[in-house]
Length: 141
Image (cartoon, rainbow, N blue to C red; front, side):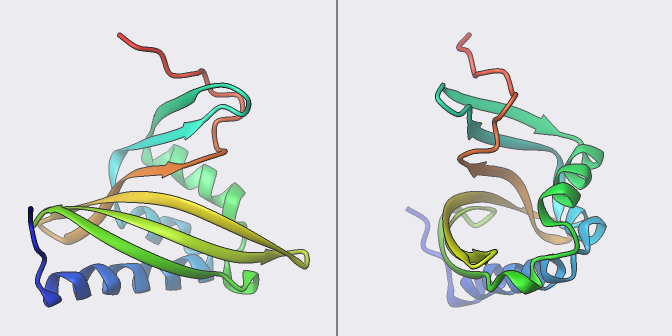
């Protein structure tokens, strides 16, 4: 089992600090610069099964513009992240987040796969429930 160094753990924290700052600003194109495409997505179809998809950069940008609008700064978003290193180059990061939308507190649990590139960490896979409305359900084989 790979044990990350303090510097490696800090590098993931620093990456998310940059990601969060860009998300606060609604800087969607810059967020896309932090990813590897095609990006894998795993979610579920409400009332159904899992759904998987791959986004191009353009699809990611469009989806994030719709989801984030002008940014997340006004949402009172707080996140607690737990990185789980698979190797020195792969880390699954589980996030427990809380945000306030129109006076309601919403809780989310999701995971991202970060991969080490020549330019540093990049996210490549997003796993979160509830994005699969209208997506075809996953099938085997």
